[in-house]
View 1 (cartoon, protein in one colour):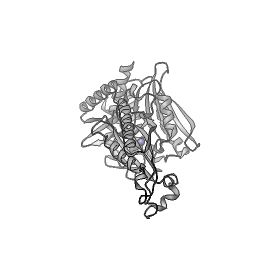
View 2 (cartoon, rainbow, N blue to C red):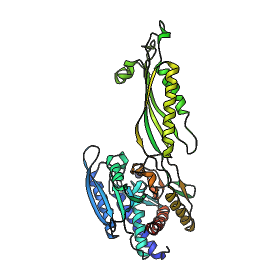
View 3 (spheres, rainbow, N blue to C red):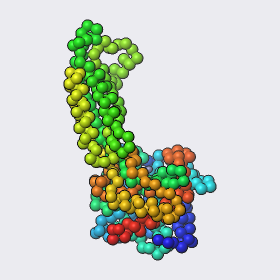
Length: 406
Ligand SMILES: [Zn+2]
C-alpha cells in the first residue's frame, strides 16, 4: 500500500500526540480509575476509526473490579483477528517529554506505544482510502504486569476461534534493526519428593538412606538434560533437604542453618522444585519422561523413595507455518521500507499467546509494538523512528491479513 506522504505524516503525528496523552494518564496495575481513563481515551480513538467499544468490569486476583476494553469491527460471523495489549504499567505516571527521537514516558514502551502504533496504522490506512478491516477484535487488559487472571481469562475467551493473534507488546532493538516475536516457550512446573531413612551419622551411618544425596544427584543430572539452541531446558529452582522435621517445618527450623545442630543425622527428606521449558509441544513428554526415569534410577541407587510430578503446565507458542509465512512477508515489507526486521522465533518469557486455548493452532505475531529501552523504569522511552516504522508495518500487516483471510 502506497500512502500519500502527507496523509502518512498526519497519521504519525496523531499517533505521537495520542501516545503522549496516554503516557500522561497514570495507569499502574491496580489503579482501576486510571486504567479506565486510559481505556476511555484509547476507546475514543477506536470509535473514531469505526470500532464498537465496550469497557466492562471484571474482578482481579484480589477480587477488586478492573476495566477491560473490547473493541470490535464488523460482524462476528466470520471469526476474528485478535489484537492484544495491556493498559497497566508498573509505575504510576510522571509527565512525559520528548527528547530528540525519544518519547520518554511511563509505559511509552511497555506498552502504550503499541496501541499508538495501531491507531496510527488505522488512520494511515483510512487516509490511504482503505476501509477498516472487518472482524478485528482488540482486547486491552488491566493486569498483565502483575500476571493477573483477567489477562489469562481474556486470552482463553477471545483466543478461541481467532484466525490470527497480533500482540502489540514491544519488539526489541538489535543493532540498526528491530525484531518481532514469532515463538515463545512454554513450561512445565515440576516437583520431586524424596524420602529415605534417618540414622545417626556417627553411630549408625550404614543404616541411613540419604534422600538429600539422591535428590542432589538427580538435580545435577536433570539440569544436564538442558540443550543449547532451540531444545528444552531444565532448571532446578530450589532444593531443600535435611531431616524430615527440618524440611516440614522449614519456616521455624531454618534457625539451624549456620549451626552444627542436627548435622549428625543422615537426611531422610528432600524436596526439589523447578521448571522445564520447551518451544515445541512435542518436546514436553520426552523431557518429563527422562526426568522420571532418572528419579527411578537415583531412588534405586540410594535406596530411597522418589516421586516426580508435573504440577502446572503453560503451553508453548511454536512458530506455525502460516505465522512464519506472514512474518516473512513483514520482513520483506520492512526491507522495502528501508529498515531491517528480524524474527525472534524462540523468546523465553511467557506472554499473552501462551494462554490461548491452542497456541500451536493459530498464527501468532508478537512484539509488533515499537522498540525503546528502560522498561519499568523512570528512564523508559520509545523510539519515535520505531513508532513510524511500526505504523507502516502494522498498516501493511492489516492489509495482508484482510486479503489472506477474506
Ligand atoms: Zn508489557
